[in-house]
Length: 345
Ligand SMILES: NC(=O)c1ccc[n+]([C@@H]2O[C@H](COP(=O)([O-])OP(=O)(O)OC[C@H]3O[C@@H](n4cnc5c(N)ncnc54)[C@H](O)[C@@H]3O)[C@@H](O)[C@H]2O)c1
Ligand SMILES: O=c1ccn([C@@H]2O[C@H](COP(=O)(O)OP(=O)(O)O[C@H]3O[C@H](CO)[C@@H](O)[C@H](O)[C@H]3O)[C@@H](O)[C@H]2O)c(=O)[nH]1
Image (tube, rainbow, N blue to C red; front, side):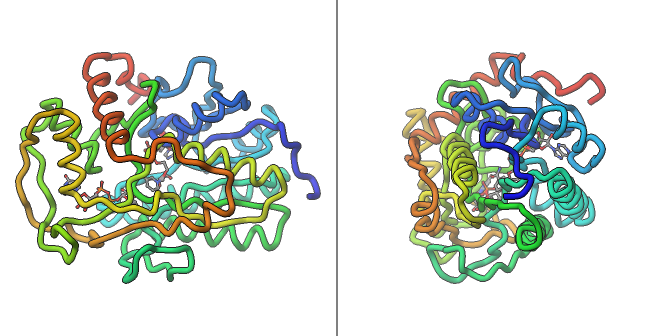
């Protein structure tokens, strides 16, 4: 491809100081790949990065900074994780989400096109599907997001699709289902100021940071009445990014791929697993439904299976839950992993 950087070039990981991005940094570095992280540390932490990782502290929408970073570090591929991720927050502050997720992604894609960077891997989400009627959800399912977060991500997918048609740019958009768990070696995990994800909240309850957990509705049309989700271990997801990188480096075509295991667990099943792993009852009660929750989301995984050389290594709920609990305990004991991201925040 005209102007495309060579295969061994450095990978720029935007949002690399965050939960999923930091696991991608680990996966890349474990394979000897050169990595540079661009992060504004708004929700990320410097301490999430392995020692020696180059961190450019700044905004992913800053085109001058991007051009300088691309040139200075010989960037050949961008993995774009930076963004705002809280669905209810996106309903209250839609324009902030369109700015941080869509407008800034536009600047990043444009900077890539201008610099001749021909490979782009994007963190998309199952939220682009909205409330699908049929399971499993394959990539041909109509995209009908029901909140600004999902719309902000879908628009970035469209920008990538149209840019790839017009410019020497190839991309993989990975639509993540429910990401959970932590690095098996305990090097990173989820740190949230305000946790919203089920397994994170369960881990906080187990460690006594919350008195109890609420199940948001048990009257759904699902086998046990609680919502069903496809939970994917964050380290497997990170490996999927490495596989997507290899796919693009080998000359592979642009793709939109679901990332999940194709297997759903109900909220009750997840909580039963937490109790099994800890050997203790988990204080919980049934609460009302949470607005906007689809009853069931399970990924169709045929396409990722045939497109990428990706074999999940942690595809069972017990491993996911146990790693999340181990990380939560480490967070409580070891102040250094919680250190504030920068003195000004
Ligand atoms: N966590 C999930 O379940 C989930 C599901 C689907 C998709 N995703 C997507 O995965 C990506 C990573 O999510 P996460 O869970 O790791 O969230 P996170 O908040 O831990 O990570 C986001 C990172 O991006 C950085 N960031 C945010 N805005 C920035 C900006 N303008 N400039 C530079 N850096 C910026 C933050 O400081 C943080 O380090 C997001 O794009 C999210 O939409 C996450
Ligand atoms: O305290 C809690 C928290 C969650 N839940 C339920 O647990 C399930 C999973 O919820 P959560 O962990 O918040 O994830 P989702 O709402 O399914 O959303 C995640 O997964 C989606 C893809 O499936 C992504 O699009 C989103 O970005 C990501 O946050 C849902 O049924 C929730 O109602 C509870 O019952 N109690």
